[in-house]
Image (cartoon, rainbow, N blue to C red; front, side, top):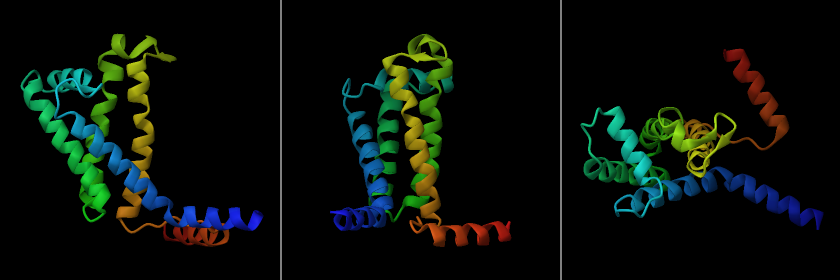
Length: 165
């Protein structure tokens, strides 16, 4: 049994970054696709209000939602295909920064008690920290980085990296 779980762990570790890339790509494509349809996305109202506020009402919801839908779908496609990851990741950072803004600019909608008790919408927004963290890992991979699952090799790589700094 121990041998089985050891092999399973190694198989998962070997494919871990691909699983991360694909799952984040699916999330972006799926949530972006929902924004093409009125009232299909739970984030539509807060996203359109945020974009309207930061563009000084120059970008109305009938423009901002299709724009955001395309942007998120392109990020998803970039991650899913891997070929365009180096372009998708910086766009993802930009888009993700925008998703966090409502926590600050619409505190009555995002916090029951600031800063410890978020509303359901606030929780939906805060979970984006996980997507941002995934983006950081995927960004390193897009630049040629690799996940090292062997502790001895990882220590040697870290020592070599520290020497270069």
